[in-house]
Length: 513
Image (tube, rainbow, N blue to C red):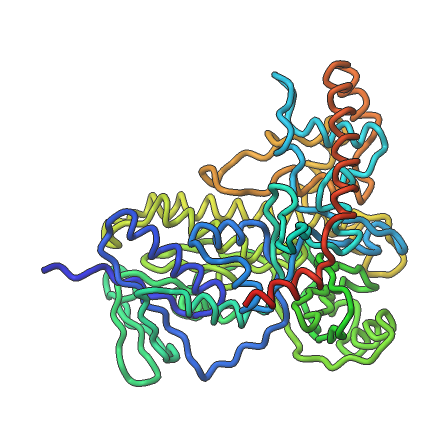
């Protein structure tokens, strides 16, 4: 009797367990006889510094029928309805990037171009964020839920939200929810490779045992234990256009009775920017900065001046921003931080893991010996383009009015990628459209205008005159867009008055347990 194909995932954090869930589910649907193992060591401690997702994570939970309220309780998760960008455009200026898309709830007139509501908002000088349900909820730190008369919870709107959480708790939670996955408590010390193909045949474990398998997923984070240490995968650096290269993480406790942010705070500083990600008991924080312009000691003092209190630095994280030239080599594929790393400005890491594993499982997963080099090349091209798009989107955040420090003057003058310049030049002539972002991920979520408009609008990079000219071409569409926009703004402001406070919602969910 033939043995099942053995897939081994090295690294059990969030990325590793997401990969295990998705590969196992797809193998089951395909009736592929597969065994899944996860190698993780109980001796390697994970420090939770706070992680943020996109709405793709909620889709993942729903697909696997994981109760969302249980997830809130077990992982100290909170809502992420968007990002609060503070002091980016200029000091003292704040804008929000809500993650819901109002175009989902209103059927456009026949022939209407995509993003017509965004174009109308810019043409009328209105903040794009105001026609989003999550816009007023972000400003008031509310949950997308209200209480019914009987005390039960009523969800407001059809939009997917995202989460903040302690990633170490999420890895443990997904591990408990897994079924039929073998867990190997060990550290990988080396590999055995095929002398002809170079494929990995087995892992050498610190127990002295060999773990043979047919396919390997490297989810070892910055260590890149298999894909780089063993297979020497080349790295493409983004350091030229994304200048930060170091992080100073710390925690801030949430006092009982305090309201809890429902957003990721991205707060621009003198030499980079600070994140604050809420869990239910504390904010996971960090200052992502460039050590070309400041030292760790100066960075710490800068943070303390900004927040008005002393901090205890939890680590000194140095990183290289960029991606693998090839995330799939032979019979090994890298996911999560093993595959790429961008500063955590737009929650691209977990999103990328989910999308990349769905792409792999949906289009390339089969008996390992039958996977071809053509398929590997195709996967690498698609995934490389995804991360390049992430890079360009993050790079766009640095097109600001700030010139108050050497860091910001350097970013403005020298750090813009040619693709960033090309897109902004195009959008000075015409408004951004969904079709400006070709879908290279076979229908899976990719960076497009839904996320771009609040950022471009917030940074002042869209020209109202261009938007007015486009709206003037179709007076009927303009009238429809105005009526729809005004109705959404009114409806969502009213909904925000009914919504529960974020902390109140989380307390209600805890009481359900």
